Image 1 (cartoon, rainbow, N blue to C red):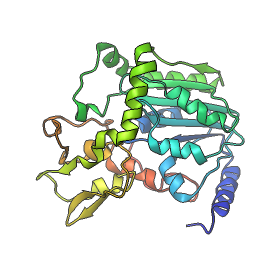
Image 2 (image 1 turned 90 degrees about the horizontal axis):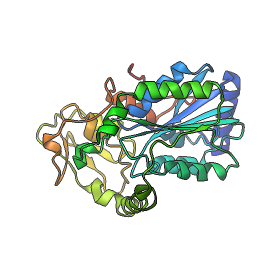
Image 3 (image 1 turned 135 degrees about the horizontal axis):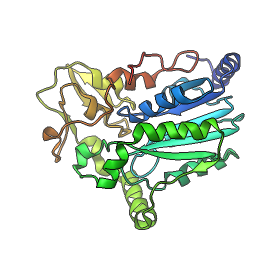
Length: 303
């Protein structure tokens, strides 16, 4: 698309300057909950807000933002940041950012993702001003079939309200770090061990356990929304390419319109899918490409 990374950065920087963008939110969403939270903030924040999909930005070669207020939004993966978001923060720069906020959607235990994000920001001599978790349904429950505690279920009921309350904090430019409830056994032993095992074993080789059953109609939506590009349609059936690493967003599993995608040695054929109401595959696929302004190039559904 661009002849060099320097040219891409220059074009994007000029576009950002011309648009006088004050707030940019960089998001990653597999099943729509993080995207929903980003849209709520876009509506509630007083500044002009532009949503930027990190997958599309990395694909385009854009590695810089000139926004003065920057938001980072992601789901919790394996008790930490999604692998794609780690790669994004390794290269992306926010030289003009005066206020940085982070919202992490999670299905239960918050873990210590806050520390992980802070380390990345410190490399840019930036500090995190505001941080929140927003509890949403755990999309991995489809694979693991683990019930949630009453505390977690109750917290999910306040998802929209919690995001709106966070918007109030951001509008006031307040320094506010809220780490939800603490679990010291989890924080200092269980979560670090599970995070290490999941990363070392690639979720215990989960990427090789996906398959499609006879309900598949060959619509190709899974290929379009696969954020890693791992799924390719061959003879009207999806195939998971062994030479491409999965991002474990579970969009293919949860958003397949026929619930035809399954995981071996699990109860996925009998379990209903989990995704944000109103989310369609185009919402997720839109993250893979951005137009000249850095926005998602595909239209997104409301909700």
